[in-house]
Image 1 (cartoon, one colour):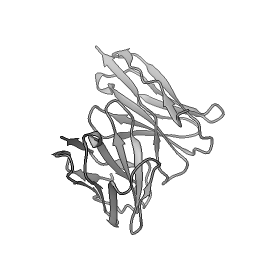
Image 2: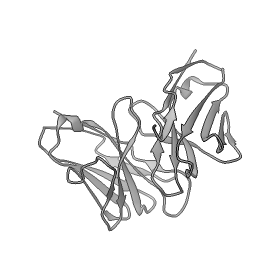
Image 3: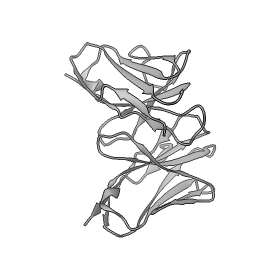
Image 4: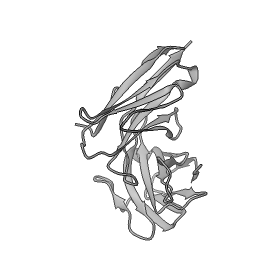
Length: 116
Length: 110
């Protein structure tokens, strides 16, 4: 089945630094990928939709200058958390749907970000 | 009102018993419906899609009621390994963004 690889799985960084998270579709092409954030005991909240070769579409309330998304190829999307603060600590998950068909969406294994 | 609402639980279920729970959605234009399972500190994994006529996959049965705008999930003969958070997921169309419910936590106990 479709596999999405996300890394790093866990990262601890200092306040003010930037962190890049990668999401790769391993055996399919994904023109669209989605980035979610999940706080403890809460559901996944969509942050943005990443479109290959064009600008990402951000959900209301999500700062595009803080959460930079790049989708330069059909198999790779990156999310960069810039100038991270402790309140950015969360579980970030990407997902993609096989453009060639199939059902449902495949999720990456998530990145647990802790900003200290 | 949230777009997708679920009873957070937890539903404490004796092993071997049946448990069922619902999810309501507010957008009548929703077209695609899914149940995902999420284990603690892990990514969600697709459990099953939900079709208009209802569908079954082993011990799991999903139903869709468009008139009342809810979907349901029933788990028969519960196993300890069924303990997880079950996420109700809705989208307007295939390929569109997913909207997640808050999840229903199920705890199966011996």
